[in-house]
Image 1 (cartoon, helix red, strand yellow):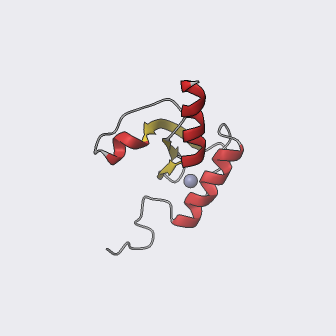
Image 2 (cartoon, rainbow, N blue to C red):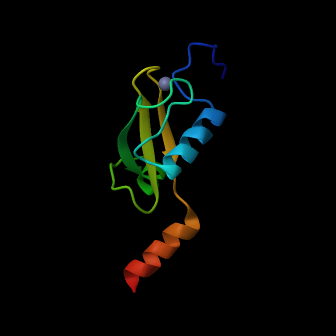
Length: 97
Ligand SMILES: [Zn+2]
């Protein structure tokens, strides 16, 4: 697969990483790596396990989830997988207790 420069509507890996770090630091204020602040909107949260199963199910932002961000300025969307095995197991343990 070859993507022509300027034609892509997705963030590249380094931009995605920057988005993920910014989201983890402050989910309410995620700057677009190209366009800056106040352009990114959290579109929805998706359940990681249902994506793996071929379904896309909106979920609440806890446990294993993917957050979908959209930049209104450059028109690109990013899906950040924020599932972290250890934390998720920890959360399930607390719920069970
Ligand atoms: Zn942008």
